Length: 136
Length: 300
Image (cartoon, rainbow over all chains, first blue to last red):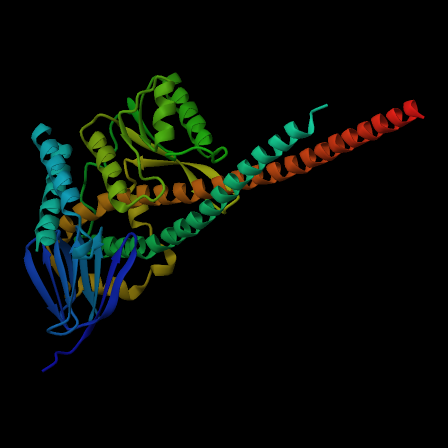
């Protein structure tokens, strides 16, 4: 049986990438994976880089590689604000590998507890997540 | 007087230049339109981040103290970020940023503060280097089409320098986009971030209903304070991204104008040269007729 649907909007600084009704949204907050169905209670969550899945129906799934961001649910609408969202087929494995190794390099050279170290750690986590998606 | 052939050659070369400048003008116009759309595309995102911050701040009762919000006790070193383009041929676009930045640096130094430069765009980097002002960090190769990731890199570099105490204040200079014909140099203080900028209600979005949401039944994951820890630095990223986008739009606008002027000048030059060539041709013909007449006279 089809589930009831709700409106989901995915916004990035480069514009809107998705705005449609879906049955379920699945992503990952800093606390762990989360699936949102229609009539979810109001929520404000911080998202980690992962694969964002939007289920138009059980078989039709729209996927994005999402960067860090936020998820807001209110009035049976979900707003996904992410720094970047790419279709998985747009990802370039070689480019990501290079970015990852660069982040690891920076991380090695960074001082303990410095801001530089935190930034490199964030970068490393993001490129690792994107690489996992790119490799399927 | 120049011979006909010389003038003809000059006309051909000016015509070629005109073709190039017209093409550049057209390319700049197309890119300008895209750049304008990208500025518009950022607005909903920036607005949503602002609403979310207010909601989280209301739930957290106050904004936690974050290193980038704290003013340093004394300002000894000022960081100056210059946002320029990777390429020239855009009128005063690059030079006015560099002039403003170097002038401000001189003012700070006159008051006994150190200045470190950060540069975005090849033009800024090369000019700073030429002036013996080695930039502390540089970001190049994207000014035609900056992505948010570029802004994030720049923001990370600046915030790191601020939090780790290498600079006590960060100012940014960029070309604000007003219209294709008008750009103005904008100077903004990026760090420390003012609490007012974050919580300043943007009157259009201020709704009582929003406040209700903040307190009632909203589930936070993690708690609002921690969400703010990440939301606040986003402001710096967004400010830089907006500066990059406006700078790109300004660059294309400035280049379009510069190239239009160049094309107009070329067209004018071609007119003048054509006139000169006609005159030269006329003179040649007159000369020939005179020679023929003189020859005929001498025979008869």
